[in-house]
Length: 427
Image (cartoon, rainbow, N blue to C red; front, side):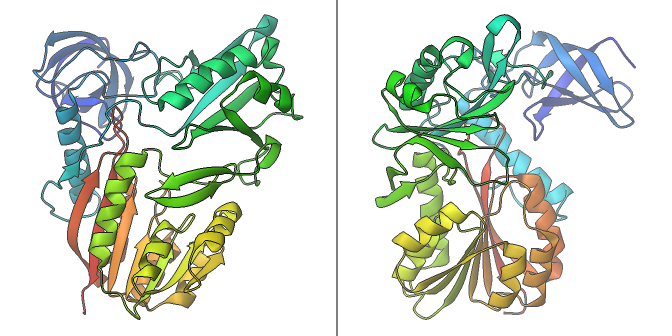
């Protein structure tokens, strides 16, 4: 089947596209649509059991449809759900998680509750843009389109995702990087990550490129810019090119020092709600309990649980994050700089394991270690419903899912954060 089709949209898929059925029964995914709509679309890619299609026209609009507030929506791929009212976005994300848990994890779970973000727009304290140097000195910098990932849509600070400090710094950076972006490192393609602190200071991390450019001139041209870092390869530690060696941040009332690429959640206010939930599920009385904080980052949970009397071991691969964790944490916390799959087996059994892995989820060896020496409880913080569901299946009968709660750290996108509480089946 090819060409123009008319489709009844029944749901939102994990990538943010509306999903319906073709006359032959195959699932079809159409970005820019909403449940309850009838849409005209053109098939662009067809496979055995599914197809993707480009929206041509909305023939019957859903009551939850709205005009997208961002001027770049529909051209760039930074957001996929802006055409939905915020409440409909939340409902879709809850269903995405429940569907993944059932379909991939083999667990029948009710629709999980989802906590909204305090801010629907202007919430990101960290955002990455791609810069391309084109012919005749032309520069384009922004986000990749959904359907053409090799291209870049030029995006200004009018984008509604970043915090105001980043939006202002991005416009200033675009004005101040010079002809051909000569004040930035050379190279055809660069990844530029801006991070803002609660006080409005901004740092820039440049991924890729050759040489250092003129970072001092860049800082002079962008008043809010406090530091410029560069990382030549994804696995390398960032190198400070100019400015302060760390920026002072405040996270949930705790002082934090941020170096180049150290991870913090991108939505500070929604993250505070998530972290309060995790700490509440961990419990207030942890005197003498052994806790393993896996993928601990700068040790936010490690600090809080040590203050509740727990004996905490934090495991983190990022060397800069471990330096900050060691600096700020109580002496009751021991940190291990390394891969979780290597270190965790030596730290089990435990009363509680907090696991906060990247989008790829838990390594198979981590699941094997948890199943072989089960902790009494696991609090699994996930930013990808599919890998969470896969890992729940891998953990198998060793654990029971006690609770599942979602948090919208990424409004306007299909991404959602989840916290699953697992209890040892033999406890």
